Image (cartoon, rainbow, N blue to C red; front, side, top):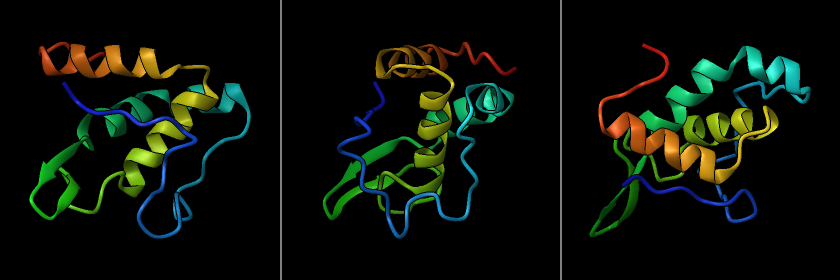
Length: 98
């Protein structure tokens, strides 16, 4: 199963999400919900001998897009349990955005 981190543990590579606008309002975050879901699912971390890296963009994990997606989903009211279930569903072939 894909890994998730708590927001208080998250240390994104570089300046976290400085290139990506994270809505501060729940309704605006829900507008980006589909893309936040995709970012969290697609930008999962994988362990390598040299550390944990994103399986999609190969940046040190958590990468910027994962952090952005995590922030969007959190702002929209999602919990880490909700995100874990989303990742499990997507890994089983059931992506909610398709």
